[in-house]
Image 1 (tube, rainbow, N blue to C red):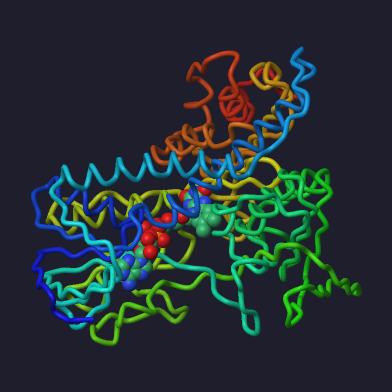
Image 2 (cartoon, rainbow, N blue to C red):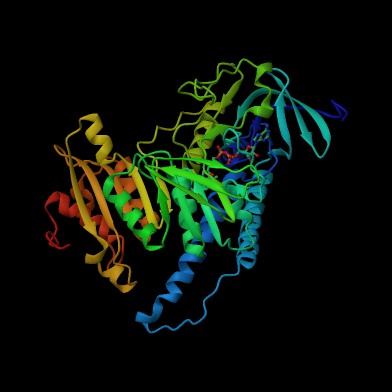
Length: 467
Ligand SMILES: Cc1cc2nc3c(=O)[nH]c(=O)nc-3n(C[C@H](O)[C@H](O)[C@H](O)COP(=O)(O)OP(=O)(O)OC[C@H]3O[C@@H](n4cnc5c(N)ncnc54)[C@H](O)[C@@H]3O)c2cc1C
């Protein structure tokens, strides 16, 4: 390597080209700033190994299941089968198309893009290693947007064949005969759901007593029932060891010990920030006690010229938050008015059935001592759900008892992600139950279930009592 091959100067250097990084870069470019974006993969985890490929796989698996179950609609689809390598190729094509779109936005905004890994050499310079060549970049301000990764549990060495992280899903060419998912939470639930829907004999072990500790019991129960229907073996409150040759996993749960011999072991371990390669010791950037990058309310690190955003900040983060961080930080760096903070973060997962959440849960309200009302509407009472033969699931709305203001919405059932859009707007705008209930909704559509849950809470539903 020859250090200092070419020197590049830029006003703003953004490190990491995921949703947070490329959003900031495009916005700053559009506002006329001199911006450089550096990262090995344009689109980040979201595009290449996370949201998009996993959702693409789940869509295909749900479609195959719908086709198999379409007899009641007079459709006969014999021998529905899944070709994983074709599914992967199709997903890769869409990912490539989306990446091309991001690249052309970056180009049109005048952003200088370097594909490589950056490390700080000071508070105003960094080295960028790309294709075996090192370039020195000097900057006035830098933004760390390097994301996070699953930690490697002590004593376990993933081999990317038999022991993998969830990223491996995006590269799968065959359906494993059997799999064990180690770790719960949103990641564990999503992984076990993908394998169950593929037809893999799958088990899940997690340390907590419940699969997703913060989820209200009714949603959790709906997910667990669905997973049980797929024959998923569940080990709550578990600990485990993997044999040295990676062939077996011994799981201890309650008073039971079981040794499994799966084709695949998927590690859904806690996340760590991607900071190893950044040489933060050459800057004044400080970390929080959990190891993630510390910032103030304006995304400034303890180094006056360096900002940070997205997953590298830790906490409950996802792509929606990363996109928003990207816009907010662009405004801050361009000296524009800061965007208002958001009230609620949307969360979507597939845990046997689709679950989406936003805002305050019943559990959280109880913990915070807030007096809330809870209203529910079942899919089974909705005409739209009936036309799609999908009576399973419900919408639950948590509202402030004294005002009717909507504080949280939790949905289990098909199209839960689409329903959550209106719920997010209701929470953000401070809507009350009757605001939604008295808004005419298209009929017969699944979105009416949210309106009905609000109407039931406001005492305005003709459906009250209908289960
Ligand atoms: C399997 C999976 C499924 C997911 N599904 C969803 C979902 O359905 N919905 C949702 O909202 N979220 C989902 N997420 C989370 C979502 O992908 C992340 O929250 C989001 O990508 C965070 O964006 P980011 O820009 O902060 O970081 P990232 O997308 O992680 O991007 C960071 C980039 O920085 C690069 N980088 C790291 N170190 C350096 C360095 N030293 N120099 C240069 N570049 C560097 C990385 O290579 C990466 O490209 C999922 C995640 C996973 C793993």
